[in-house]
Length: 155
Image (tube, rainbow, N blue to C red):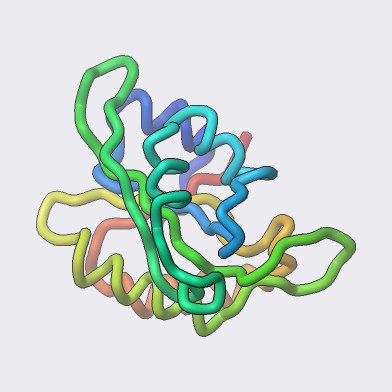
């Protein structure tokens, strides 16, 4: 994993990535944090979330995705909704499922990555998800293997 600093959405709109991954709860809300910013910037990603006809429990550990277009370059990229939390909330409770993170990134690595792809993501599961980044980053590194992937830390 390479770490870069910046605004994930702004960088996506500059055409810097092939895939943008963010963590979602399984309630089809995208109402806070990075998910809300994705919902506003890339409405097709939210549509893919809403149109995924699965129960909340069945969503956990799966993904949905939508094509997006970089605002500044016109390049296509994919926004991947990784269902890493069954529920959402605040107050220090852990909502992120480490097993779901593993399942999502295994799927992403096998189905969306390859030669020439660049995948980027924020601190998935660590904001409102309450997860431990040391654990989550190890899982992502294991599942992404040799694929090019970046953690984008907000300035």
